Image 1: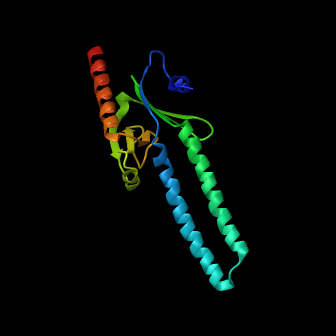
Image 2: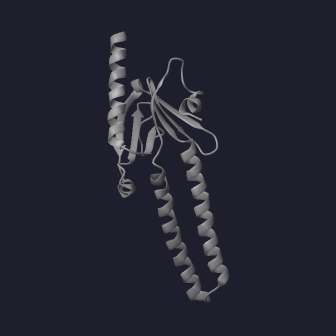
Image 3: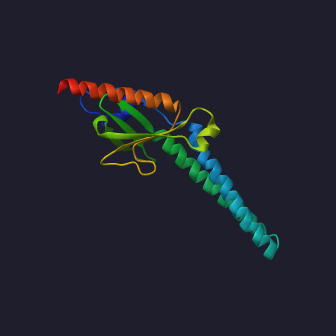
Length: 180
């Protein structure tokens, strides 16, 4: 299914998709990798404490392995579902963020209402080394507190995308100024 079909429920008459983006797949899974590391270290400390106190017990070791595998599998499934549903779209009128796990959530922000844009590059983005990061958009009705709903998360070529969006916003503003 192409992006036009995915966005058919929310596109207005005369609205055109200028560009669309997907999150960087590996960057989306980086959080999973660090969750697994923290979980393994925490549970390892817990099981070592039990082993010291009660001696080696196979049941504790099996429970430890089961919990790590279960949490990893659930999180990997959720990230995979999120990745499949997520698309970031720039149209001639607004930005659209489509996300979800089972259903599809659409968050839309008209260019006229965007009051702030924040570019976010954290240390996990630096690990990927593909110029990834997030761009967050804010308006008076939806201020940016942390990552807002209007965030293009884990996108590649972050600064180029930011320049494109600003150029489209400026072009859109000039068109609306000439119409008025």
